Image 1 (cartoon, rainbow over the protein chains, first blue to last red):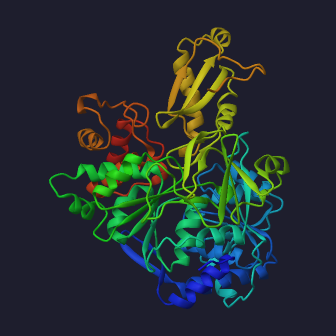
Image 2: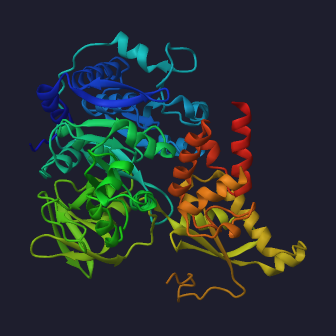
Length: 502
Length: 77
């Protein structure tokens, strides 16, 4: 059923599946705990009341942490009372997170204790931040408010009806200039993206959520779509344990990025001496049938390989700016070379080879970045930065990229300029170009040979590797540089003296 | 531990056991992806009955570093 607000999604499902499990998660090694749809709605409404009591209804609420029941409660509670949720990447350095907290005008922050360092730094550097709420603390203390205690104190219903076209979520995405951009999404953007396509997924489907929750793809497809279907959403506690958690939670469906699909393919091929159908039983369990793939390019051969074992891969395509799904494959109409059919709420056209899309999921714009917004949106059309087209039936085909962004196999967007600027701060680095090479991020460096001579650096490669290592130490996993190429000559430049990238 | 690691490494990437050295780096030299690496550690976690910290594991670069880390966990058990 098409819903125009996130609250409608949760309320509809709660009415139908109230006492059934909504979320399952691990406590300890192998024990599973569950929360029902009624509990999820009740706790979310209690959190809405917490925000009201703190004077934060309508304000910006940051959420930092891995996927958890508390994270979900904080998210639904925030957006359902007309406030704006700002999910942030828990793996970023504290300084970077504080810059985003400040830039997104966050006044209340729900924080996983694992990033207590962010809370400490934010207290001194984010003047607009008024409330720090700990996801784990049993009781409020001088350091932070306790999420649990607040929920208990303000327990009760909240019948606020958010407006469909009001801002409800800001998600940060890598910008081409190296500064991340806050994508502003409304209730309608997200709710219609999650509910406008009937993928004929049976209710009570068991989904294992393995992707980072601050990503639009996970938030929209695992959580919002999952809730709209009355699914059981199981939380994977660590990327180390995906295989183990598949056995524990016995999912029917997993949303993955190509990087994970390729590793799982190796696991399938590793099993020898069994018929194909039994191989699936061993790796994914008898009940498993579907993988949704998104975030980056998936080699079509993977679709055939998984099909052999009785697993359907449904490929999708999108970007945060479109809440995020633009096109999706459905199980009864698969075309391997395409990235799926346009969602019913989306139309497309091609302008100078670039794919433009329009519809109810296209963002409002970038938060406080009018120039970047004007460059990306034109008369309601979103310029995707991808080269491609949609055919008469709405199947989308991509042929290349216009934007200068690295899309890693795990779906993370990395701005090469950001890395170039950071690594290039060292005097030994005269010129640097960062790009993707054979699946990893590579830095090609033209060193300052005069400087090396002055400083008597003999092994220039080793010195450059030390610089990369020092950068990697601070960087989140998806921004680490794993390949170094040293140049003996300067890079070729274009007329404006910029390094030619291609 | 090193031998155990070499065996399991060869299940994830196409490399001959004799080409895996203590100072081989998982990503740069052996061609691991970050998720291959995480999955392999998950498998070892079961096999050795230890609990690996995802954040500590992210700092491991070479086969020797992985062997040392796992030995340390095993000793703490």
